[in-house]
Amino acid sequence: MRGDEKFPSHQLPQKRTHPASEGEGNSHGGSASGGAYPLPAPYRTFLLDNGVDPDVYLAPEPPRYIRTNPRRFDSADPSARTKLEQELGHSLEPVRWLDPPTSPSLSPGAASGSSVWSCLYSLPNSVKIAGSQAYKSGQIYGIDAASAAAVRALECRPGDRVLDICCAPGAKLCMICDEMNLEGLVVGIDLSKHRLAACKTLVKKYGITNADLVEADATTWTPHDDTAQPPTQQQVDTPPAALAEPPESLKFDRVIVDAECTHDGSFKHLSKFQHQWGWETFAKRVLDPVRISTLTSLQQRLLLNGFRLLKQGGVLVYSTCSFCVSQNEAIVESLLKRYPDAARLDPLPFGLEGPPCRTSSADKQPTDDPAEMAPSPAPRCTPSRLTVPARPSLLEADGPAGSDGRHCTARFDPKLSHTGGLFIARLTKTKAIEPLVVLPTHEGTSECVKDEMVIKQEPQDSGPAPPPEAATPVDVHLPIKREGEQADG
Image (tube, rainbow, N blue to C red; front, side):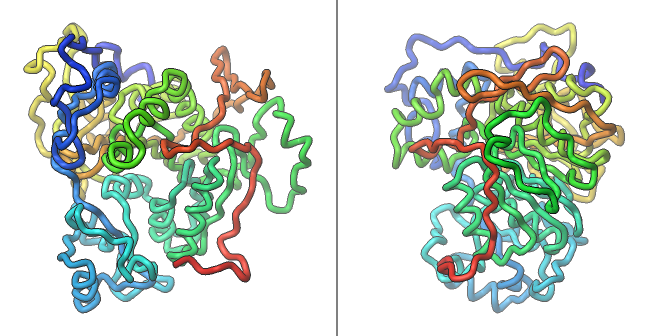
């Protein structure tokens, strides 16, 4: 698929007017507990400006999802499952839509009968796991089922080289390593030192042995041959004329870019702002106009570098937990247009049971009529052996983009999927691309240039959790194992 053949402007959601009656005290809104609190006026304005229906927050709170550690818990052993259910005080419901009959087994150190996908369960959200012995001993950890679907979409194989951009806090990275049977290499990159430290703790706790964690700016990071001399501080501080193109052997078979975003699809984040940090903090940290104006540029640069480091024929998954088209479809579309002969949407390894987000025709004008904007019914998509509760994105509003009739993008939401909100797009690289050029600018920033396109390198933000942390764009490898370190507990 060529980038200029999809996602015409008439498919973009239109901004809606904001009635004068809407204000701070408006009771319409939603929450992770089914509309228990009103959405503040600034946040509602943000949603409407981005074509997001506030009613999505009226959905019941999604279940809590957990994953068992296949090296310390045998999911095929009924007695082990019964013991865990007794400890947590509730039965475990397997997430069947991610567990096909032919799931790969986990061989190195895995419990007999375990598989990557048979280890995922749902619980009522009221169930707390942090105080349980199973959690403290590394038998279980939390991960949303939609995030697990993003790992599913990547289809990692034993022996692969995998790059996880914005890897913290590490639940997806652990799942990727397990899918690879702990064979091969997973490089996890994050700019935030404290978030990467949390990721390091997680991989140690769950016995992950094939990951290398790097504190670096993922918009410009390049892998280096281990036999090469480390760069001097002067080389680190001086942006190169061009991003060094690594040899094909150092590029990656799989890349996942779980990009920094506004987190408006994450009930977990919104709940923290409601109960812990306050909506005023949310407005300053998330809705700040300067932050929003630079966020999509950051997302573009993360995707660009991830695609640059992908091997020819490799697979890249781009995801965010935002509902906003500007942070999802528009970012993917920008890559498709930038590299029309090298970037192509690639079929997901599962079908989608939901209808398209919206359908329209080239000669039809956008409308705010709810009846016109409602998604059209669509037949259940069953070209693959696995079907998940998600819908195609606006990139595929007119039909599947895959040459075999399968969809290449998916949107998970609380109403349809009973998960947090998540956008997923799967792409492949069909040919080599030109190197990205980095030019020094004032105040320690840089610019990526290709052809006539300039993307400013702003400081990368680490996420919504206050207080913000200063970024240090220097590679700092955090070894997973260190002698004498206190064990995580």
